Length: 281
Image (cartoon, rainbow, N blue to C red; front, side, top):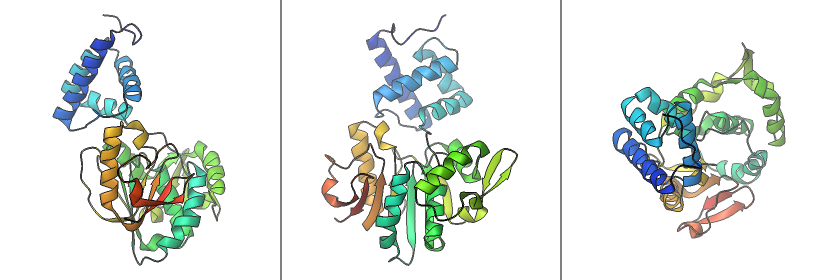
């Protein structure tokens, strides 16, 4: 049977098959993608159909439910793991200027990096906090729904050929040292200092299905919500709000917003462009 093209696939049939696939994944594996933004989801599902050399979404459903290794590949495909060290350097400049002075007033700082992916942005924040003299009184909880990327993040090993680009982003983010001081080069890899991991807890957590697990002074959930529909965005905003202490700091991605959510009035803007907020209610 030849692979069908999404362009020639009947819309009604495609919709039914996608719903059945997502329902099956949720019921059997506990991963809930049912309220993810449909355009991105549809594209990633078809990518998985092609990668598995299958003809239909129904065939993908059968393979995913009967082959755990296929499910792991499918999960990697659905998870959005686009990241970089000091991604959006303006955010880190704003965090240094607007959030760090607030954090200096706390004897101990809990930070939740929700949707940490492969960890580049977690290590970026650890470096920033170390340079600001705050790392020793911080505990960073780095979580993702994908256990494979959490393992990767915990290792703290990244391709060496990316370090030149990351060095430039680090400098744009207000870096105060030589970026190469934070890693050792070995076998085409950059191995980041173990001291940067000393206060980081890497763990599995699903924003869609799991509850709050602590109270935090800072929550970073950047470039995650854009992949959810409005219903799921509001659900996650509720989780973030309930997990953030009064006067705590929330960081979102540039394309994300608190506007038109039930929690808009609960925050003040620390930096409107970089989507940095402080909880005030």
